[in-house]
Amino acid sequence: MSYRKTFKLICGVAGGSAALVFAAAAADSRGYFGEQRGEAASRWSRFTVLRAAQPAWTPANHTPAPAGHAWDFNWDKRDPSALSNGKKKEKEKESTTEDPSSERDNGKPKATRNILLIRHSQYNLSGNGDKERILTPLGREQAELTGQRLAALGLKYDVLIHSSMARATETAHIISKHLPGSGVEPVSCDLLREGAPIEPVPPVTHWKPDAVQYHEDGARIEAAFRRYIHRADPKQREDSYEIIVCHANVIRYFVCRALQFPPEGWLRMGLNNGSITWLTIRPSGRVALRSLGDAGFMPPDKLTRT
Image (cartoon, rainbow, N blue to C red; front, side, top):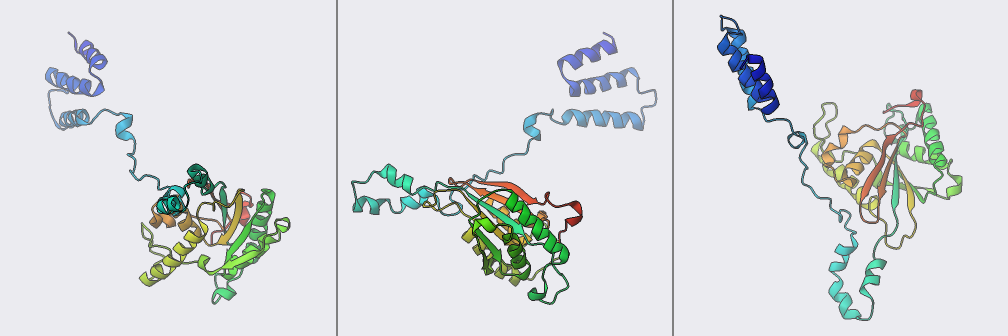
């Protein structure tokens, strides 16, 4: 059988890797590499052997394996089934006439919470202390554009909460002017102030807070997450739309925690000033990120990340 026929036959039967090995051996024995069996022939032989040793490509060995972490439906400690287990025996002692199914239904959340996290606008970085770090003229323009965007969405906003830092407070008050029909008044919260939530991984060289800052800020920002990011109360009947104006570090940490991603990855995300990050929390405890740092409503020359 000729060399060419042998090669074609093996390609059709045994596959490419086996064909390469056989062809290399046949060519070498017949002198196709030339009478000088030098470096080029050796390299070719080594390549074909290594190539044959590799497993054939399949979707199974090229698809990342699942991390194995199941979604924790009781991440906010408000799962009705988990809450009812501890009180089940007490309820049975108190009353045996109530319908258990209706009791469970009454204790289940029925509404969806939509939380719109707004990063403050550009501010004066050279100010001495928080009080002097107010919005720049461009920052005030950005806040106006964000307020216009929120108004254009046509949603009925329930609350407008903001960090007590000057730049977030000013941003929130400018936004509120564009929501006159909503009846929401800006409410300040110290827990939402900027800080260092957790040491980032991988680390960065341009920003290295002391360990005590992570310890203090991390506890506060985690407390803010637990206060504001959770499923609706069972008494809430209608879906809600809540605005929280705060800071990039706080928002990024909230997103990681809500999606059950490793919280130390918060610094891998970037947010524009005045951008909108939209979290949706279903009654079941499922969380979805509808948008992250949306600033598409701003002209390109108005975009900043200070």
